[in-house]
Length: 454
Ligand code: HEM
Image (cartoon, rainbow, N blue to C red; front, top):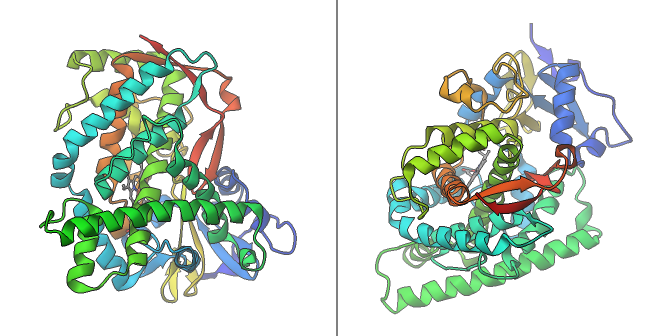
């Protein structure tokens, strides 16, 4: 017996806009877990005039992810908001535009490219290690997330743009601080039923314009630099993502300068915070679990070298298990927003084309049906093969699955090795002080730690 969306249960609304009050909150992912407990794995929300379906059923999530791009797309707000901001790249585009951009991104992130890039990644990791040395004497501790952002932004910009920004060695981190003003605003706009920012620019919107402007100017200068090298004949085959796009532009005129900036910005946006926050959460969890930390140190010591890891990376089963467990307990992208491209059915529910679908990618993470003692940080479940990998979607799934996952895992392993081959991390606050803050990605707010030599 089929049901209509309006027949599904819904949490109590707040105000005229339905559930918008909750959707704007930085802990909406946690709220959704509570609603899942109270209303089941399929329930309804209202954002203004639109009714949305929340899907917290692992099997349905998997089916929907796999049915892209044919049956589902990202929610159309995303393309409109990103286009307006001049950021419509592979993440937000659809159809032929997406296919074309996805091919360029995949070739920039394929294993052969990562192998060629590895020596540069080792240099950046050495610099990261030196930076850790300089942070030992900071008595009030440091915000590790900021340090990881510099590291991941350096790697992404080097791989994608062939440019060493050296944010790790700089006092100021202009790219990252600009991105920090961009993330929350994008997140808010994508979920907002009414585009208020077009009528009135709040201080947050102004900071967004200013931050974005700064990053775009930096990127435009980089594009000019690459174009000059190509025109002068210094580069004959593309060596990085930016060059690949400039070549495309010169040969096929398929990309405008605005498109190139948008694509470049997308990679930076998608690659920086996600990886930095995953690293930060991993450190947070390790710093609270001395036994797991000790076992990691022992595993790393067997490798017997504190120099940056070579390519291919040595096998570290315990480290892999730790990363997987951290991504389970603290998934940095707990949700994605899609919509069906035609009238369809999801489970036993009839859904109209364009209905917002909130996929709770984190739905299975704490579910005892998939993980025994699900709240506990227990990396050994992955060694014993007791974890249900198919209940987790840290990188999404299907044709639009994260193309940066191998790069991200390489970065995370190299950073963990750089840290634990010489240091330990001491948290400087009670665990409950560290809050989950979800604005595009989910970050550990207030996580301050001291670095000490082992
Ligand atoms: C631990 C780190 C990371 C996590 C957890 C993560 C997670 C995700 C997720 C959940 C999606 C949505 C997938 C979907 O719709 O099914 C995504 C998309 C994407 N990610 Fe990542 N990501 C990470 C790192 C990176 C890195 C390092 C890059 C590149 C430098 C990157 C580039 C992208 C791009 C371009 C997309 C859009 C793909 C498309 O729409 O076709 N990500 N990522």
